[in-house]
Image (tube, rainbow, N blue to C red; front, side, top):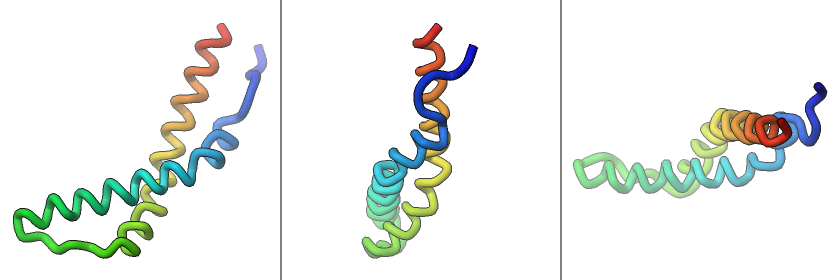
Length: 75
């Protein structure tokens, strides 16, 4: 049986802006929470840069999960 629909790569490319944005927000808020115990507060631009990097693997694994759900639904 062949896979119908989008590939994992295409799903990841479409979802990457959302994954990078979510990672950046989580990094920023984690830094704010860490500041309660004396940690540094990072800037928004640094959290965006970190989010761009963390968004790649997070989006890839989410796209694999979505592709798996599509395969299960096709059975």
